[in-house]
Image (cartoon, one colour):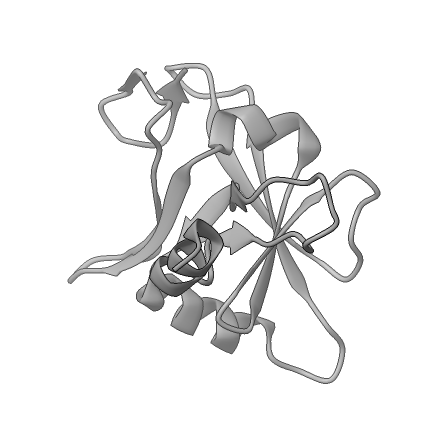
Length: 134
């Protein structure tokens, strides 16, 4: 079995495939979504007009960086597009290196519900968990 078939079989939603004559390589998605995040995003973005969630990073907070989530109706020219399980998330080009390889989860507890990012690039976070440092 060729390696491309194995990769497509193992992780069909986390890679972009290339045609046989193309020089492009298979690559992982910039951001992966958990099933809970996909379900929540489907409910937030459903409607007659397409809406997308744009993930960005702003310089703020005690540690220096914080995630910035905004809904938008249009895709930016340099946005990285992540399609997974019928949900489209846009990653701002300025935040791409910071977010690369992260997993976006949706967590509900007794007092709150929010999106959580499991970022392998983060070297530390502040005590409240709102900001991080790369």
